[in-house]
Image 1 (cartoon, rainbow, N blue to C red):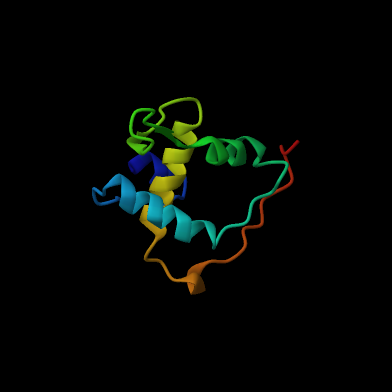
Image 2 (image 1 turned 90 degrees about the horizontal axis):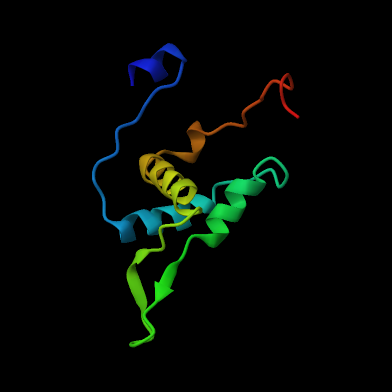
Length: 103
């Protein structure tokens, strides 16, 4: 948190939460988001591939998501959704990123 502070980023500590709560927060958070199709390509692909496996015996989904290449990015997005779920839309404003260093 100290390092983030020196970079001008205010850190938010999340309370522990269950997976289902985090997934629901993510569903709600997605409605408030927009993604640059080109710059966010890898992140979008990770979110699209975050999934639970099906139990072949019962036909139901397993309780835990598949832990693969997509899970780390999707989990990070889920944590962001949980940390921002109670924030007001009024505080949100578009970010103007500097064009330097962006390919």
